[in-house]
Amino acid sequence: MGGTIFVLALLAYLFLAVDGKEFRGVMKQGGWAAGVFFVGLAVLLVFVVACPEAALMTAPAMHH
Image (tube, rainbow, N blue to C red; front, side, top):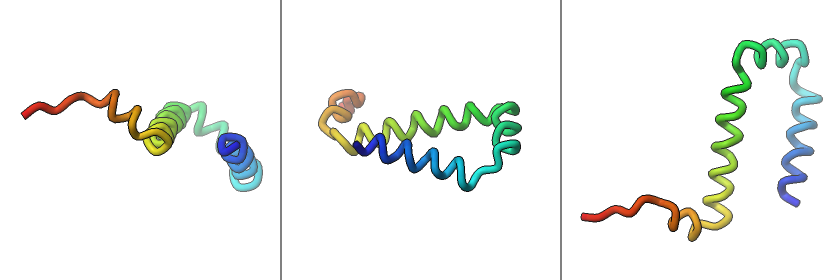
């Protein structure tokens, strides 16, 4: 449900606030890489917030 709301909000933002020609120009110049990076970062953050126990299980162990 949260994902659906996020996608709808993102589409509304892109449709209402972003100039299409400028957006396509930026994507052609390599802006897609930044988009992929930030989407990946957002997915990781949501994963950590949603189930911190699983995130701790995959973290490297610290030994003193």
